[in-house]
Length: 178
Image 1 (cartoon, rainbow, N blue to C red):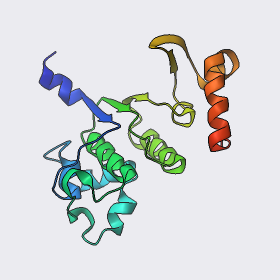
Image 2: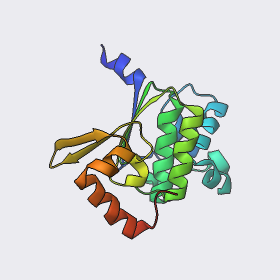
Image 3: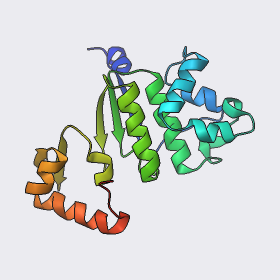
Image 4: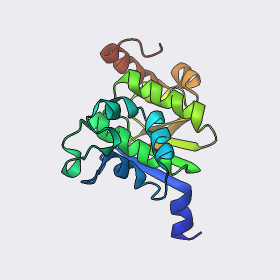
């Protein structure tokens, strides 16, 4: 497989994202240079970015300061997610790319992805149980070694390390099952 073919099949969003000194529209369109305005708006909706974009004076035509310093971490992450989604990849990889989102926004994002890009394979690297719990399968790593691979329910019942993580996060964040 050529690098170009692979690049067309996969979108990757890291925890640390890079935004360019151009408009919000163009920052998203980088994922698919020939994307229509409607496709960009569609991706922004799924990424939960539309609300903060609509709050900007110039909407999608608002300029982003160098490296996105005019935006919050969560806003930068949502733009990077929209950039990946607009490409309509077959595989979408999130590398802790929702860490700056609150749990409610993150839940809305994953629901919108289930509703709108259900056929896209999603690989999500996350530290929060709330992020991983609805995945088809969860891989639990300890020191770089896979120690378990199963559903949230089965891991909660049978994996001590997963139970420990769950319980420590439950105390910090309240009931994440809701």
